[in-house]
Image 1 (cartoon, helix red, strand yellow):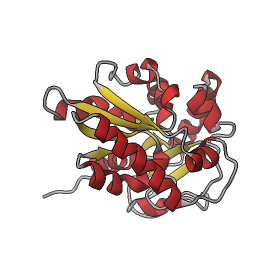
Image 2: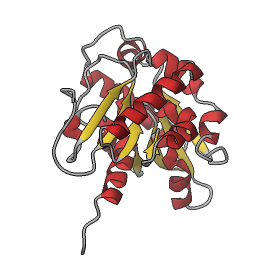
Image 3: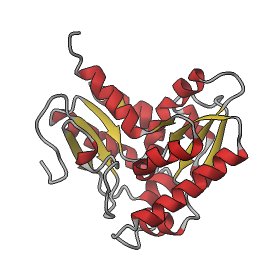
Length: 237
């Protein structure tokens, strides 16, 4: 087990991780203090943000499948991913293991849409708006969901640390201002937005502030992981 793992408890959740080195603050799926249950991390070597987010490199499928099978062998009761753009591999990854696998927070999109009254959009906060395609939505049956999208690729702190990997140190305050700026603009420009789904795991530590500023429900990989974990650890009433 690695130093990033949290032991003890029941039904550990496995996390497929990109190869990144920046600081993962509380609220990030790769910071074990985010959860009150055990988490097992598996870094896929060569899976850089460039290859996963910008390129959607199909050559990464086999390494991710291998990593998912390793997590299952190590006792993961369910498996998820630390990048929403892994949604492209959802079908293949889920078919490669015998435990539930949800590669991306975007798998929540159809559910969230059906919670809203007709005419409402689902806002998406993504790492790179230009990289999000119809294929990503089709991978989870969300191609007909009305969405409005904001991307972080032009924000300096996010771009330099998360996308380009120029620095290991993260200025969390600066990143929070960038994230909130995008979220507020998205809400302002789309008054018919009824909820937000955060694609990018790096933005989740600021979900509480996003909700506070936009006034709508906010879904992300942590909300989904907590729901899945609860489904695996039911207790009698």
